[in-house]
Image (cartoon, rainbow, N blue to C red; front, side, top):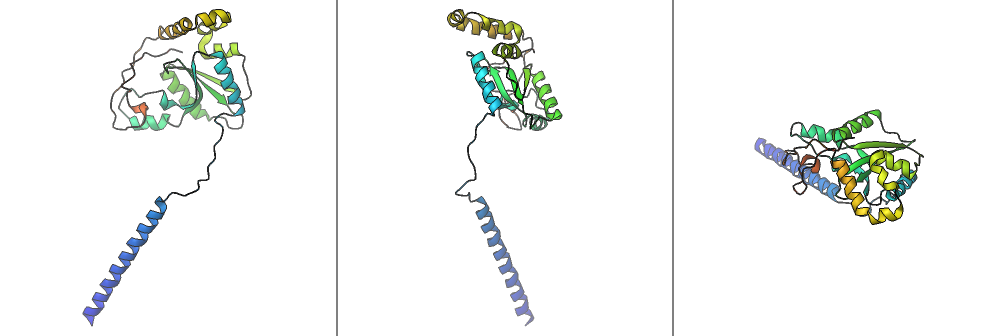
Length: 224
């Protein structure tokens, strides 16, 4: 009788374990199953203010690239392996509204559109400024609702010296567009004095922020 009771108890325990295993497996399988209908819809990338500024930037810099909604990690790389995870976590949440770039993708200036109903926190602004300053990238903030003139926008983005060539006659600009573009790039690169040494590999593999792009040459920095 005692042996029968022990066997019955063991069988009961085994059955309970088996049932529990099946239940856990079923729940996990159900959790992995993706829904047929997703509660998502497309929306505009730009706010009304950002849309206006984007149009002005395209008009002001027809020979430069204007990119939008870029995370800082997309155009920055870490220069040391130490504390790579810390630096990625610090920088990865930060992004800018617009980036004005040379045709080769080199960022000259970034622009943030400040929203009155959703202002950026002071800590985020401070982190962003320090990161951009380290890369010698000009940083411009434009308050919500402010629409600068094209001339003012050129000076904000490039500075008075580099923006001067845009003010010439249209016929001259059209004939010398390639020369002007080369002049702008040389004017910016000519003021660069330091070269970054990027490491090739990282223990933490997160985007190009932590990896050297083997197809891109090492470029010096742009002073603000």
